[in-house]
Length: 196
Ligand code: GRF
Image 1 (tube, helix red, strand yellow):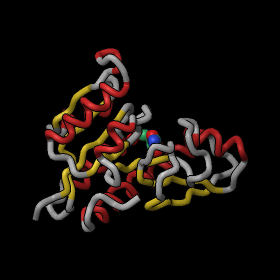
Image 2 (spheres, helix red, strand yellow):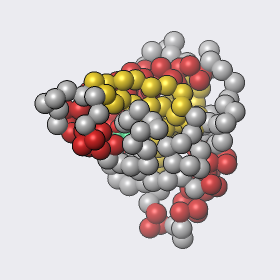
Image 3 (spheres, rainbow, N blue to C red):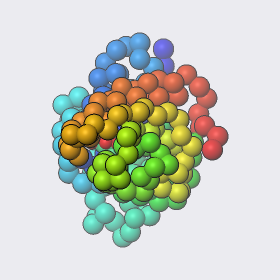
Image 4 (cartoon, rainbow, N blue to C red):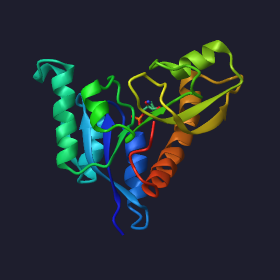
């Protein structure tokens, strides 16, 4: 069985990356992470190292501008024959030069029920502050409009009266960790790129 080659973009803890790595340990799972790219040093890179996955940091400071950085990152992913890119806690906006190369092949996971609380890194805190009864997480295709691409899947999470940002984030992330591998598995079974 040939498995879908996945590249993961990270900036932080990497728990969603780890969920994909774990899923890929099952030889019957139809995808595997072959490359991890980060825009800074972060814990996620250590997880990639532990799993013996190729990894590279693309620090903006090492490039003339964002476009050059994203071009280099895209080239590296292509050198690793990456067929699907997953933004898993990646906190930079991708340049057009990158999204064009991987159009219909880039996923993002966002900790809200999009379109609610789009375009922010504080979606969990904002949901709590807004007093909503439920929030959740969304996997969507990345387009040039931040958090606006076609929605592929969502999971709902109830907001409890005694929730803190941390407790709510923990329950949302638990859903993310099962949702993301499910969506990647689904995409591995259909022709890519997806049409936007
Ligand atoms: C996740 O909650 C995801 O929804 C958001 O960033 C967080 C990344 O967490 N985009 P991790 O680095 O995967 O642990």
